[in-house]
Length: 217
Image (cartoon, rainbow, N blue to C red; front, top):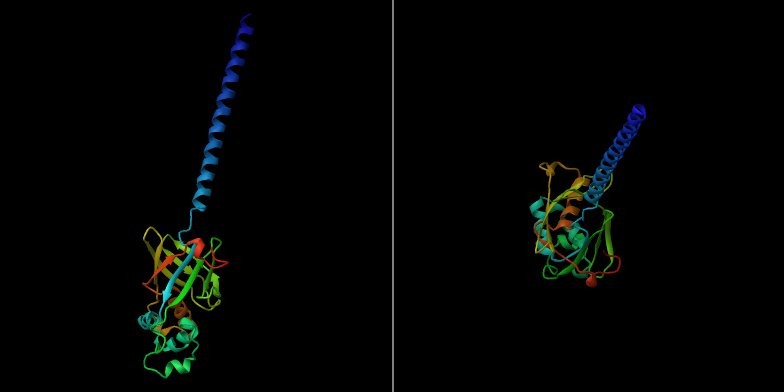
């Protein structure tokens, strides 16, 4: 009788031990899954730049930004290429005037930037035509990087951004190298593009879906 009694106790004890082990493993598994869920949530945090941003560009603003960046010699080519207000001029025509914006400075030119969720970037002109495209990434919560937009030999373009108006307005501050005057021609052209894309210090407004062009976010 005594040996049988001990066997029952042992069985009960073993059962209790197994139950505790199962509960412990379940708890560990639940914690691991919770950690994965948290990591997944972190990786899917909404990118605040995703969407379409618009501003009315002016030639005067652009020329001032180019001069402030130390890229004055590239102004004729880039003013001509921007076609402010649809005006088509050549770099030679721009050089004929002391004011690069003569005949253009009072023309507003609607321009859109689109930051897609998958890391694509695009620009559209006032007619809704795609005029530029590339890729971007966020280095951190306030730093935007265009990785080697002008080819493998060109620099990555970096800009800090800040929001206002409940994140419906964004402003970019282009990061320029200390030795820009010693940059190669390709390097200087890349930063001229950076000026054109960011319009440093000037706000861009978020565009609601009903006012976007086809193909925009």
